[in-house]
Amino acid sequence: ESERERAAGGIANDYKAAVSHEEMLRKAFTEQERQANDVAGKSVQYNILKREADTNKQLYVGLLSKLKETGVSSSLKATNIRVVDPAYPPKKFARPRILLDLSITLILGVCLGIAAAVLQEHLDNTLKSSEDIERFLQIPSLGAVPAMEISGSARRLHGFHTRRALGEGHRHGSKGGNGVTGANGAKNGTSLESSWNRIELPEGNGHQNGALAEAFHGLRTSVLLSTAKRPPATLLVTSAQQGEGKTTVAANLAASLAQLGDSVLLIDADLRRPSLQKFFQVSRSTGLVNYLTGNCDWRSLVWQAAPIGVSVLFCGPVPPNPADLLSSEYMRSLIREASKEYKFVVLDSPPLLNLADSRILATLVDGVILVVGGGTTPRELVQRAYLSAVDAGSHVIGATINFADVRNDYYYSAYHQEPGESEK
Image 1: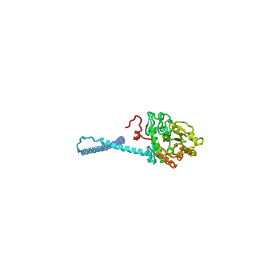
Image 2: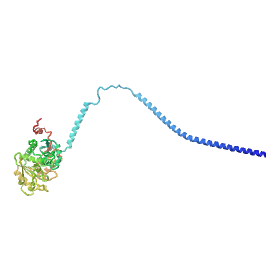
Image 3: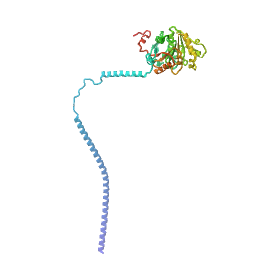
Image 4: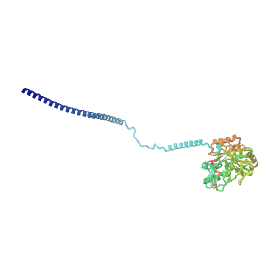
């Protein structure tokens, strides 16, 4: 019984020792498991730091390599520099070379000026002088009427910009003017009805308008010498388009012919836009249209323009059918009868282009005078007007340039000075 108790006690002690050993092993296992987990966490952090360290190391190695290459390159370039010649201050300036630069600039300026002048001449297709008329139209130039303007109390010869300043006046009905302002003309703000320039009217200084009178005296002489046997008795004054001064040329030519002591009849044959009443500043309700409609004799309708000695037959009321009236037998009879009673018969007609009136009248007269606005009318229009008159069977005795620029004409300027001016 004692051995059994001792054996049972020994077995119980062994069991307790085994349980205690098992508990100790369990604790040791738990501790080792915890330590293993800590090692795993630190291993992850270690790998992260290791990769960052490797990256920084590679960057450092690259920067160090670049630095060494830069140092080597700098040392190599420094070794290639050597002094060839010592630097000395210059004895004279290299730039600017004033004489050479001025010479080149002068040559370039002259060349550009010539090129601009040639280009402007090439682009300008207008007729500006008598030489242009003879060269392009191949017809005689009968004369040149200068462009004029008011300067103080006297008229002076002037250039093309006078015409441009009066362009509005032409568009507002003053189609017969020659670009000249009168004593109460457009420069003073009044209407252009009083701006017609007439050779018999005195200038502001009391003297006759000698420059304009001489221009029309030259035109008169050319007309009288235009034919071989005798001068043309019936003349038609026309133009390519309106605003070129044909009414002024016709009226002043008639006045210039009357100054010779011959009888002159001036007829306003422009039945569309008559202008002779404005030119002479009279108001008459009867005229050529009344005769052409068979209402009265033409002689009773003639108005005497004193003191210049020109007989004027105004247009009268504007008809609805001008071309029919001008092509009637009354018009032919009027020109035949008037040429027997007057030494010269001058007709102011409408423009040639786009109208049949002037072509009808051109076949009834001895000669046609073509008025060309200098510097305003393209030469193509003037050529068309001339060919139109020739095709109609008329005799164009020549052309006269209006608004002529005579500023560069020494002969003209020397013999047409204002009183008190000395020749140089």
